[in-house]
Each structure stands twice: as structure tokens, then as C-alpha cells.
Length: 202
DNA sequence: AACTTGGGCAACCGCCGTATT
DNA sequence: TAATACGGCGGTTGCCCAAGT
Image (cartoon, rainbow, N blue to C red):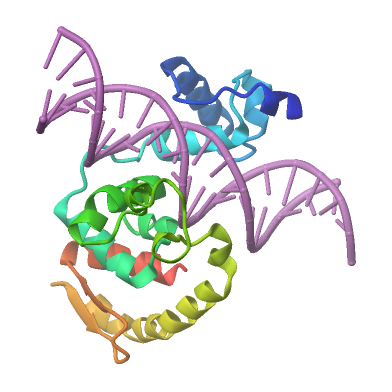
């Protein structure tokens, strides 16, 4: 396996590689990504194959700009879930976590006045300094900060769960306001159904 | 026309959790 | 139980291209 890893090609995929990967997945299905380089001769890591398939080649991936409804949903779900891009994407049909993340970082964070860390870092002379120029490391994901965050909104999720029946009855969209004021959630009629299914599948 | 700057996005990296051996 | 493999996630990087100078 190391041999394949070592000679792995990087960078953009070409049409031929896409075709090889698509044929493989259609024949064998997803999973066992690390077998792909061995079976197909593709000079890509299994990880890279998975990413390419998930983010680009999957037939139901929607291309192009986000609609207003999608944008609205991203904003609301982000306020609810934070940077849980995969969870957010799972509630927006046809959108991948990478798309949602990019959309947030390039469009919405700007629109909503969230400081772009990339630019912030540049402004700090290209060095991540302590204080204002600091950024959360990936380790913090499983650390105390996340724990506190999770605990803080889990009560709200419970509250939402208790409102199950009301959600299903309202054909004209929903608006929720939670007692501890952590967030408000509104859904349009179009998304009410899909949100319900996704949420209770958690 | 040449160069610089900044936005958009695909892809990579490093880490973590889970499954398997 | 420990080691290893694998899949998945979020953060970050770097390329491409259009707009501005």
C-alpha cells in the first residue's frame, strides 16, 4: 500500500481519472477506497478517490450557485450546529460538506461580517500569533470547547425534539424560539419536511 | 499589454473514531 | 487488549481566473 501512497499523484483530476473512478464505483460501489489504486491502477490515494467521488462525481451532487432557500438554510443550520459542515450538508439535498464550507467561507461569512481567518492571518504578517490572530486547532474539536458547545445546544435540540408533532402539522413553515435564547430557527415550507427527516435520523 | 490583487473553489492535510485483525 | 486499517471530518492550502491598476 505504501508504494501506492508514495507514487500518488496530487492536484486536479483529469477526465480520464474521473472516468476510471466512476467506472470502478459503478461496478463495485463505494467503500474500500484504498483498493481503488490497486484495482484500477489510478495513481491516487484511496482518500483522494473518496473525496473526488463524494464532492464531484456523485450523480446527485448539485452544481452551481446556492439558491436563496439553500443560503437561508445554511445560515440557520450554521447558527444551530456551528462548523459541522457534514451535518449541515446532510440537510441540504445535493450539496456536499465541501460546497457548504466553501460557500460559507467565501460568501456568507463575508455577508454576515465574520472575519476571514485567511485574510486575518495575512494581515498579521503571515504568522499565526496568539490573541487576535489565533485560530482554533483541530484538536479543539474533541476538546473542552466542543464539549461545552455541545452541552450548550443539546438542550435546544431536546426542545426541538419535543416539538415534533407541531413541526409535522404546519404546512406553511415553522418558526421556533427557544427558552434559553441560544438560537431561533425558522423553516420554509419547502424545507420543513426534509429537515424533520434529517433531524430525527440523528 | 503586463502586472498585481483578490475571490472562488477543488483538493490536500492532519486528526479522530470505529471496525477489524 | 493492542495494533492497524479505514472512513470521515474540519481546517487550510494553492491554483485558476477575472478585475483592477
